[in-house]
Image 1: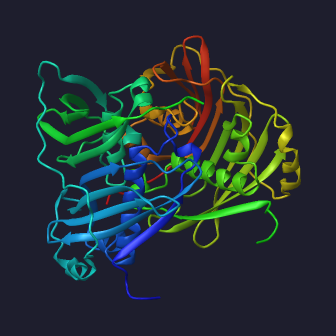
Image 2 (image 1 turned 90 degrees about the vertical axis):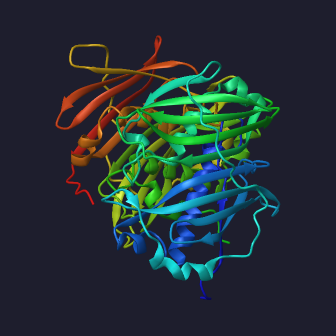
Length: 254
Length: 254
């Protein structure tokens, strides 16, 4: 055993069962794996689930940006590396790098985490994790930071659909989970679209918790250049704002 | 390295991010992990994705039965063990045992797999995997085999809902994935129900592939004793038949 490490890596195999219909890693799986290695690293730093729950707190994801340059191949190994870029009393910034089985970098992600008080559902002070400052790494994440989101209201040319959150959309924190928000946006496009496009970048900011039974309005506005601004709202509140950028893909059916 | 093994095990950590709102492992995660260790074991036996795709074939799940006696605790390790119980030219029967971090058995699963010809979407002959017979294990799975399903038609007292399959519901085989069928059935109950009940057993048989854009009718019929017969159909075809058995749970909110 060495001292706690500023970087943490975990190697996975991309199974056929996890691939999307274009035989690629879905961007939602990148998100799930990033959340998983973040959990493993936080646990190893003594800043994980156990530490926070002892104060009645839980980590929640506040912002996530993913860039995928290429997908690992089906049945091949890939590695997710994570490190802390910044930390203060309100937020922890954690980055990710994905490498393929040959060690080539094929994706990056940036994430911002906050803690909530589970009972009061309010942002919590992270001062008790001050020692995490020593775990901040100098490793550079070359992807751009998330820029300001464009609000998307009901307007001419804005696509709109509705979805009521069900039981399986909700997670440990008893609110709608990250992957479900992402899927609601990805589901605005059909199979033909994904046979000719893949997600190049996905930015999402979580603003208000959505809960079981609430009805969401999903809005998508074409911003040109293969980019879309998106919003998921319910009643008077905006649950999340997003930006999706698609790039060309030539999928050949087997 | 030893000879290929008749049993295969993989150890996981149950993260908070994977738990359901009752802080337990969702039955859908058991299914996903079972499919994953089945993939790893098949790969190690030379009967995995690579071997089948060389003949234009892919493994598909035909039947799955899961019993969960208890959930691993959040942030703890659990292990999934798998072995082949039977094999013929049409099907491979593969079983699973879940143990907690102390080695106690907390769940079992039975699965039946077949191969399809990807282009023709027809059942394929598994004769070329005849050597798998040598990998059949004597290990016993104590859970009952799946019994015959009760068809569920539109009738008085039968709950009915509809769902149109979207992009994120579809997988590598370009049809709706196992977990989505299971979630459609679990979503027939609300948060209050799951604060007082958990899944004890889940049986599902896949009968016809559901594809992108198709509209499904979900039907659930109370069979008494906490059990339900369920069916997901579309147009003239029945996609899947299921049986769900719930057991009492006392979830204390944190």
